Length: 497
Ligand SMILES: [Zn+2]
Ligand SMILES: [Zn+2]
Ligand SMILES: [Zn+2]
Image (cartoon, rainbow, N blue to C red):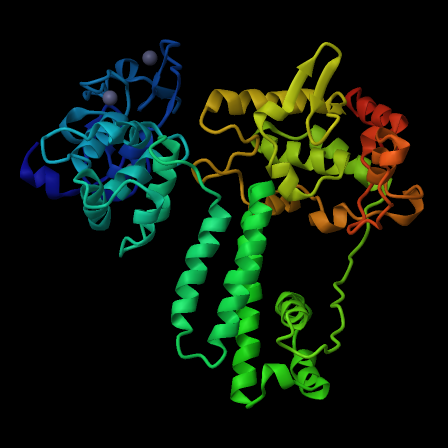
């Protein structure tokens, strides 16, 4: 190829745009974007019927393999033989990632430190992020510095050392990689994020007239409450977000007190009402934590503040619930995960955080069918939903990595609450808080969960019935006739007839 040819612009044989020369294949000049696109298509060749990379085009425009299209370029990795786009020294992206990771984690002797070897493997094969993103991350200046510090021992491989590393931008991703590689133990991320956030926030409050009380609220009250909760189960990302909200509302309230020369311990009801009355419902709700704590610990007089009332939205009646279920059971495979989550929400009336906590081990095949471990005892899974659930579980098991049924994009984490709520909304399921809310005419007397619990406890162990904090739809599987209706959806019977 002459230099004139290299610099001139040609009409691309694929996209028709005038672009700089990149390659010339039997179907014409190929621009760089079309080349990159062509090296991503894998499938059955329309010419020879083999499973291969399909960069070529036949006369009808179908994708065909390199041999059938007579493309004069090899796409075979010289290291592992895989077919695909080739990088530096004619290796595929996985081999390139492996080389680059090993280079970045060189401890100065030309080899990777033995305890960081698993990190190289995770960087080369991690299924969660696209390989291109990992390559770009490895090429960032700050990543090079961070990995070199880790490899040479200037930064220890532990959570505390990562917490105090000056440039925190690459730390969350590196931490997740180290956990996935088994180089670091897992930690409760919501808890850890809040601790780090609170430390930074408190350092910025130095000199604030109410710094002391805010520190006590954050460290003594919020942190210890979260730690106690985390002992029971991993915190959801929402727990961190809510704690941040609570703390920020407390800071705003204390700043207002300071600006207006009011003392917290001598605050009068009319003065407090002036502030509280001007807040939105969401702000009032998140200030309540601080107010209750300040009153119980006698840092503030016992003032009255009304409990905020949220709009309740429409309730979902049984018929609409069945219609939605029918719609979910008929969907396409691309949306399998949100469809399964939607069915669990509609069938078992579970809140989103509980749905996200389901792992592959919670789905059990028994002699009589499939059961889902949402609590004790496990809930039976009616057909045709059982088929859908098993399909998703098989897909997830094949993909590997973590055991979450609804695996998220962050390594080792399930999908986010918000992400799942958005996907459910896209499928036509109203926000979970509304879908889960009871519909008065169809709800039998007493909370289903309580009635269910009552049947399972000996009479003398019976706890005094507490009013349910959130009113849920009764899980459908407790109604045999409704389960039958769902099963009939599979036979083509329309639920609304
Ligand atoms: Zn093109
Ligand atoms: Zn072929
Ligand atoms: Zn390779």
